[in-house]
Image (tube, rainbow, N blue to C red; front, side):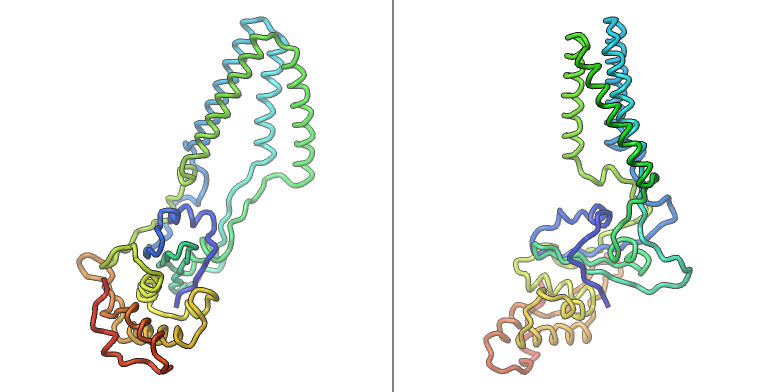
Length: 311
């Protein structure tokens, strides 16, 4: 049995790189959880580089204000630099993924993710991994309560106001140094925002491996993609439990029944050497064409539907 999801949590999306799936493609990944530290921001990621750049610019502006003997610029550097530290302290948080508190054996809990472009991602995992990544959203645990955050925000507002006043009374050379620093820092933030979000996170606690199959990931039609997802998951129950995934008509019900019969008779197995999934010999496109073109609501002759093998 597999659960289907159309909404992917943030960490799961980073882990699978769902944006790389082309339309009507099918991919299978096996995920296991290791005992490494939990998911957290990388200590030496792009955001750390931004922090170092900002610190370096503050030191440079501090040196410039001392060299120019500009007291107002010196106070502006101190106040505005302290502001970013104060805001970071007030907004400090940690990521917490849902987890099972009771220690017990857990069954497999495969998940099928249906993307808007008609692609499918089948996840082979146990219930603990499914609970943490797919069933419930992540939660940000803030270190400061509401009252503390408001007090810090008030202090930050005052620091910002005084910092701007000091900067407005600084010498023109110091003001030009501030302007250049903020332009460079803003450009650096835009560059980091364009980088893959996965670079900011430490995901070593999850080991994701792609399980290949005997044909291409990409498919020409949604029907073929749906059949491959059914074959890998081993059931059609998740299709029936997902409104809008397949038309709720008698003809499509016949197609789903035959797909389940084929899977029950010849399960999708993995090659012992290559570990590739091998699909049963069945043409879902031809069978659907026969069903839709027939006035009869009974299952067509099975021999007609099994002449061709999957491509």
